[in-house]
Length: 134
Image (cartoon, rainbow, N blue to C red; front, side):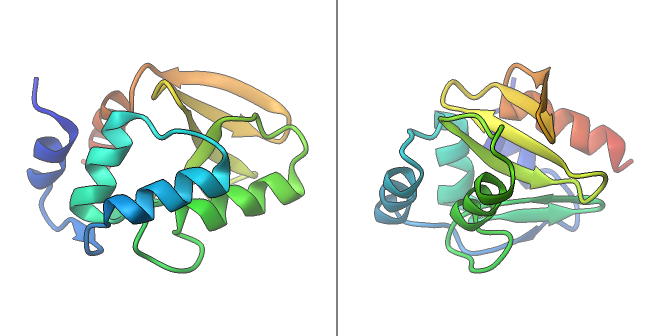
């Protein structure tokens, strides 16, 4: 199976930022008091952040609402149920739904205080996003 970087490279019309540095990754991990899963590190080192179709993932080396640290800290400020050692990967902008990821790379849907398992990996979630955008 292709790794997440190879999968992303195959998406037509992929919007992306410039990849980030290891220092930016380390600083973000320190700010969020967590360790990013390897797939996420591979993704942000290569792409910074991405968008395609109706999919818009947070990342690093970008400012504003798509910055992972900013998005995660904002959600923590408004949602006391936000779980520790997780970060926001995508804000679905519908009914306060956020896609969040833990240190093991497992993906969850967060809506207010309800957390529902979604995928076993970011790569698996990417496959869902690709299917949704076809």
